[in-house]
Image (cartoon, rainbow, N blue to C red; front, side, top):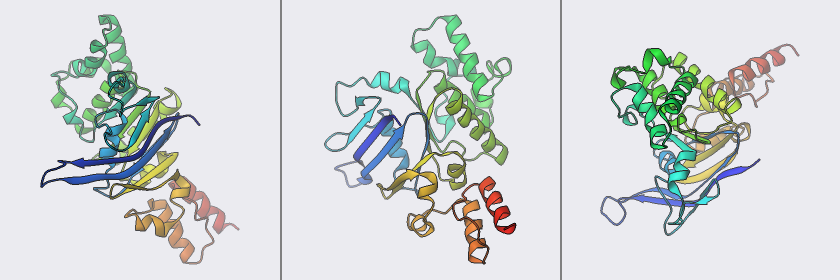
Length: 286
């Protein structure tokens, strides 16, 4: 596996040297490998969003910490942060905070226009990005941005980031507030972006079912520190440790643990619905 982002001993204090100083990160670590969906999890206030902002240079290490993304040391004042931000697309938790143009097409076109593309190239890029996220070009390109539903806003914000053709896509709570259908559609989209478009994805999520379904690897933050990094199934294997981190197992994992405690010899490694169904079937037909 090729390491494309490495964060070591990252520390951050909001409003440092003031009476309102708040420690957000206390030596956090994170590794992201090319071609994976990586998840960053932890209880509320663990520092997940803060750490995410170090990935594309919105925050940069100063006295302590090491952040290297696509070979660039972001702590180096001479590093090319503009290029880095083109390579690392960041989608915020609240998409309406990321949309600013009057019309959807103009919002998505903003990045490509800043790159100096021709009108034809911008139009083609916008059409491609909208198609990828499931927004019909003819229907939405001239739609007022703030007439969109919550799910449509999320897709438009994602399209605006994809139009910059990033190599790493970082999303903060990509499905927060969406109904089950909306979440499934976003999950399909993220898999498509990884499998067909070749993007690496870093997903901040509080939804352990989502993490179990999507993530190849998981990093656990707790009170600003990294407590665990590893393959998803390995991280979820220790129920007591997960509880100590302030997290729950995925619902499917809780079910198989409950069945095991009740006397059914079911595989405790099942963490997705499909895996739980298979594990229960196998246990019942032995």
